[in-house]
Length: 151
Image (cartoon, rainbow, N blue to C red; front, side):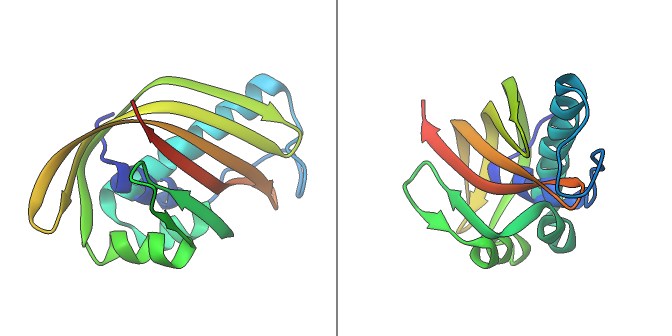
């Protein structure tokens, strides 16, 4: 899938509910939970691409810490507003070298994020590493933290 960084974030929010075995508990097998986290990552990517505010809102926790490779850190409100206002947009995003590790009600997802970002009328390539921390919240995986880093 080809998605930009912000598009990926919007996409993740586009898929509002990823059901786990029970509220407040990741439950299920590690493989099943890993697959559910991968689905949440893909949903976030779709929400980033489409700048879907309601989807983004559903996919991230209120205490979100969203770190960019530039060092900028945004909270949930700033993260969603930047995408939905189209101050930054992702025409395409591709995630590669993906991995997920589930630990109880939390999961760590890592990948390489490649694509383009349009900001201030300029299109720039993006090729960064990303680590995301997901939390099982009420039976669905939601993003708690994300940190990008330059490769």
